[in-house]
Length: 369
Image (cartoon, rainbow, N blue to C red):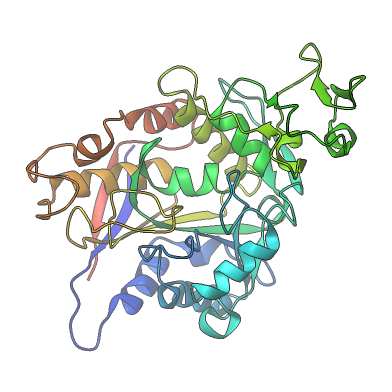
């Protein structure tokens, strides 16, 4: 049976703006029905890297906060720390970045809580029935929330073709070690020239796979290493490198889908997804810059099915006219615009998500005013 995806266009008129439309989608998609009094409701979003201006704007988030409060819930904004450097790799920088980009309590009416703690090491290990993975390391605040509304700025992505609900929840909900697991099936390597012998990595390794050699430099016993990447997170000298290798084609997308399942199973029947097809940039919201949109503003979608909403979103983008002077170049009428920009088959995440029971690629698009 096709999943229901509710859609409203970006067109507005006097007396009814995009904030009002966001509130209407919240109701029509049934999000208020699964929020109970005193539920701690995680609003999973990306607050944007400072310098990037394409991220979801705070006034739209505030309207969702208000709807959750109307239902008796207690909302909080959340995202997990990044695996790479930048201004969101620890809770202090992450929270300051949120404030710089306008996500203060005064502007949105809810606090921002970093899901995986100070340095990305606060998480829950969630059992999942995946094909590639049997467990997922989910940021503790997100995993322990009673319900979740995922608000996603839909855009392109250099590793997965596009970034939608699956990317926001699966990658964005994982702790830093969980992000490493998704990006690579291989194990970290230590650059001993940078190692100071501080033993931080030795102390955090759950398998006691790291020790110091005679030169007081850390080394990894790969017969014991499970590739959890706790050591990459802990090293302050950059001596233990993040392994970005994705393995065979589609493996990153498939692990990302399984991590989305890892979030959803912690709160069955209490997850909602909204994709905002506004400022649809060719690249993700993580770099400190943003390019011009590839298609016009299209609208907002809402569903309880993360597969269906992402499929509907990419279909709407691909059927829209391309914008001149964008990364599409002279392929403004291309039937697969994200493939033009990134030359990636983005369908793996949707096919695999459907396979593991995360949702349905078949959808019914229901347009509302």
